[in-house]
Image 1 (cartoon, rainbow, N blue to C red):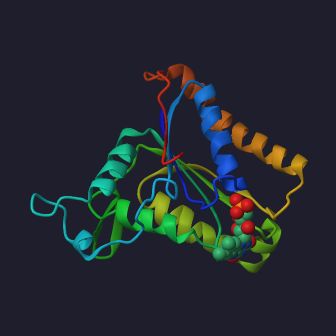
Image 2 (tube, rainbow, N blue to C red):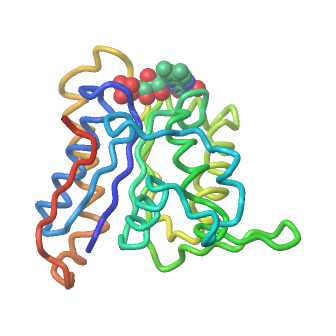
Length: 215
Ligand SMILES: Cc1cc2nc3c(=O)[nH]c(=O)nc-3n(C[C@H](O)[C@H](O)[C@H](O)COP(=O)(O)O)c2cc1C
């Protein structure tokens, strides 16, 4: 299978980036091809410009970076999106990626306010990280808001078959090493759980490893 992994975190050696590397390495270990879009390191521009609200056509082609990302999503069997929860939402960098890349005509069409996803047939995995304990987020209703707005309104609405929303809670500075290692193993087991059997059926077992933007 071909995977696209998209991650947003400003610090290269952060917990979030460590999770991303562990997950991507496990996909490769399973014999899949993967491309990681490291939005900060590749200098992705998250600002949707006025011209991008015009319908794409011969007179208004999609911006090159958006067209590249859309081609990568089209080519992938599975998309994995990884980010920390900031104000219970995604970092502005990831939000800008969604705003610009999940454009009308590519990710969805809408008629009379009813959204119709265009990316069906593709699988998605969502991986998020929070400082707060998950039970607290659930009790306050915040977790439901996250699921409604992110899992459903973005990824399922676009047509993805969301295999899992894996969440790591209580991720604080100076996380105990054993806890961090358990989390790395958890993210590797997520890759195995969903994609181990697909590896043997893959028609594209060539190992193509690209970590966009990584120095
Ligand atoms: C701007 C900002 C906003 C944050 N908002 C939340 C929040 O709303 N809820 C929460 O549980 N944690 C919040 N956090 C904590 C982060 O989710 C947590 O520190 C991060 O996921 C840990 O992963 P990292 O070490 O890779 O940064 C916030 C952190 C930042 C920097």
